[in-house]
Length: 249
Image (cartoon, rainbow, N blue to C red; front, side, top):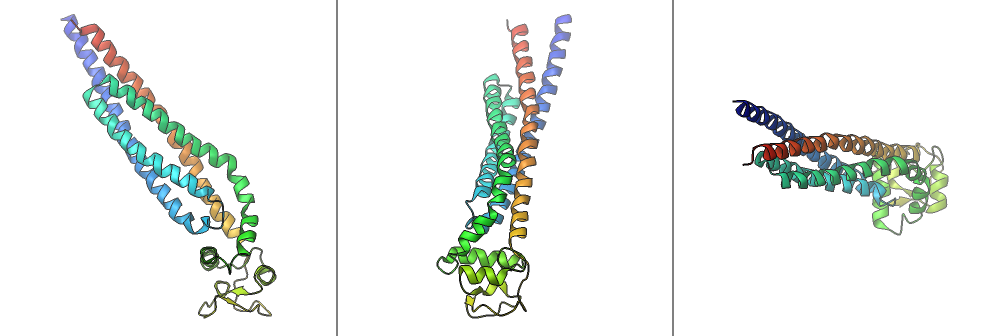
């Protein structure tokens, strides 16, 4: 009778541990899907601007997408491991979750450490790429995309005419509030009437900063959540090992 009671008690513990791990994996899978969505959103949002920079934001977005997809697969593996009560699969799942946690943590740390450096490079990136505005079509399209979407012109507020006169000796049509012009680049006008007067440095820098401020918390929060999965793995593995040792003939 006592043996039967102990068996029922252990079975109860096993059932609770299984469902906790299953619940973790369902959440883990959903977080992986969120990570994929955010990564794709960041990638698409930065794709046009990345031509003007070294593409650091695309690296973070690509890692988020890849780790998210990996997490979705691992989440399914974890559910199977819990249902089958397989110690080998649970160990494999533990190692994979540890790998995912390291990747998320790397995204958070990388974004936090290099954010200011990359933001400080914005002026130089804009200045260098503007000099090839007429020579490089992808760069020209990227600049036009930025000036149209942010309704800005040049780099600094109030100095658009001087800036474009210095780098191209003409003014991109994307600087005009009314862009119904035939020429890609027009002669420098004598005043700013009909032009976007704000510089692009502020809006572009703010846009880049928002991307980093998404990646930093996502990296750290998702990495911290993996700790619960690791603990759940250890608890379930220990219960399975204890049950096997106590009741194997």
